[in-house]
Amino acid sequence: MVTIRSFNLIREHIENQPKPQRNPNEQLFAAASTVALDLIKTEDELAKAKQLVTDAMSALDDEIISIKSQIEGAQAEVFAGGQYSDPVWWRRVNGAARHKGKLRQELQTKLGEINRRIRAARMRENSIQSQSEERLFIAIAKLHLPPQTYERLWELTHETQRMRAGNDKD
Image (cartoon, rainbow, N blue to C red; front, top):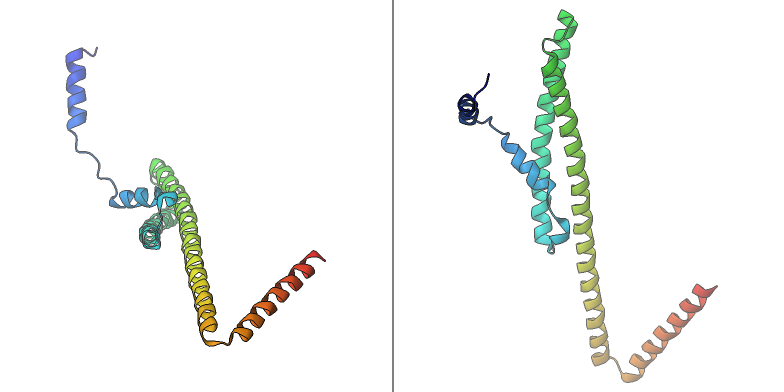
């Protein structure tokens, strides 16, 4: 029969047991998985997020390789001896392999989204630079061209726009 005193002794014993060491990469995986892309505004922050996810994927790949080599080693033993040495370990290691594979897919999806956002930011930046060049060209043309030539270029521009608009309707 378990008394309150013995229950407390058992609980103290369990609480005083050394905690199993967590994989140091688990923190990296958790950080990479929880990157909130909606809160990232600058291209520099996107680059840092990309580095974090890339580092996590690299560490995860190392762990997946280690797990697969353990599985292959166990399969080689089965081939040589005829049965798995520890069925509980076998279930755990295969579960870990599935979990790591799923985590890798999640990180790959996140990396793809980060890359899409980086490309979009670069395209916006290029568009802004292009618009600035066009405005600069117009200002220089206005300063250096005779007024008649400048006005004629604007007339040609408007005619071309009307022709395009007419072709779009057809």
